[in-house]
Length: 126
Image 1 (cartoon, rainbow, N blue to C red):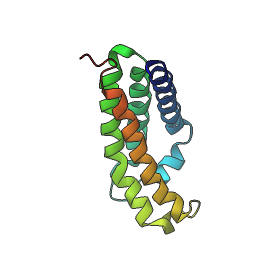
Image 2 (cartoon, helix red, strand yellow):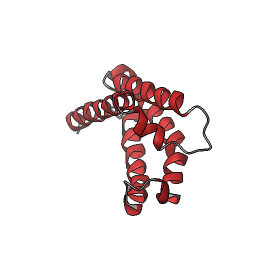
Image 3 (cartoon, rainbow, N blue to C red):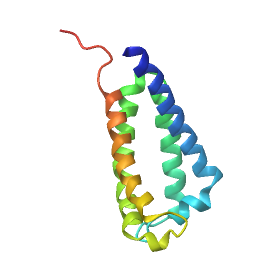
């Protein structure tokens, strides 16, 4: 199980690094999905990209993985209201299906649970 956890931690970390880099490569897309009630959409897109890159990178190091996992949980919770906004207003996102926007919320719950797995100690002592 420890080997599986190690490999999946690397995949998860690399996923977030790639997602964070994508915030800089496709900034207009991320700005377009920002809820209108949030100020400074470009700055928030860059900030979330930096957070994803940094936390994903920290997750790759065993020493920092628990802290990174809690950071990713906090980040996923912080962006959850924006994803709820998308699901409640599918007319603003014609490129996405309404079902897909709701499934995205479910996926976010899975990502939070996945990060929580890394927040737990590697070895449990009796």
